[in-house]
Image (cartoon, rainbow over all chains, first blue to last red; front, side, top):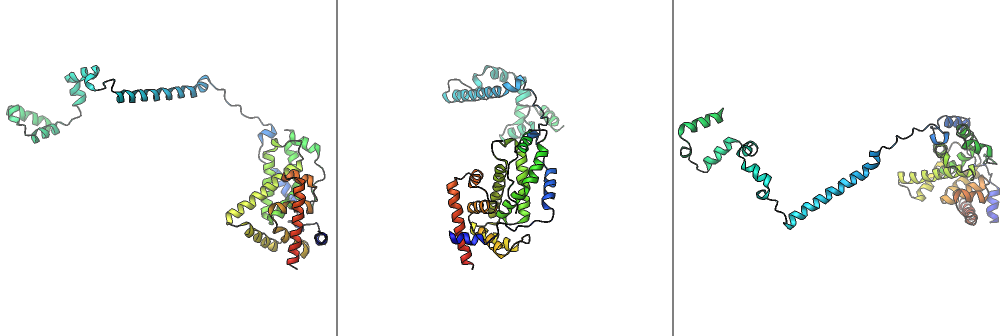
Length: 148
Length: 186
């Protein structure tokens, strides 16, 4: 330890570090000028947040309630499908039965999207004999209507 | 070498805490502490340009978190903590960036000392800087603050959050290693 102190006593406590001329003066003014605005420290006016409306306060709970209701409905549906307690087929749905019994509803909404050419092609492929169904004149009339 | 300012002026701290005067007070803090903090940082990173950047970051961080400064702590202690934290973070980042081990970084620091043109002093001063560069970071910090800044162990303890006993042991070990370095390089 004595020798340590001997070594260190021969060396200056000055670290010998040099800086460019006027560095500290320039540094102090440069950094002081570039300090950003500190709103908390300098007490600058801070924009008050807009007051929370009733809907903003209730909104998270409303969303949560809607989410739970959705999950409950989904589970209920799965349960009905799994247990078969309720017959969900069209035959047992009075609204659907009534709708499908109405020929104008079926023509407008069910058959409306079917291409008539495809129907005729299908019938031809299945070997339906047109003369048996129509007389020749009405068949020609039907085909000319389709062509138009 | 500028030593740290003798006293933390209570009026300066008062001005720092007053919104109306805090900006001017911070400018005074920068004037007062830039030199001792610069030396502390540069002795860690051994490069003027890096020390300049880190010193600037130190004051910007101090300013942006000035409301966290508690008047019961010494201003110098708070600033030294920020500066040391900046230095250690920088060294760790450089090690990661250059993929260096701690031993590799020691060589890098010694090379930086040899290439440093902003230096006064004789060969012994240079040798001492190289010897210090071989110490672990914590020992370098303790040795620099004790030997160059002549800080009391109590203040070093406040800055580094280490007990006085551990600091004395750390300084003693640092001196031993420096002695060994001089013996090996005679």
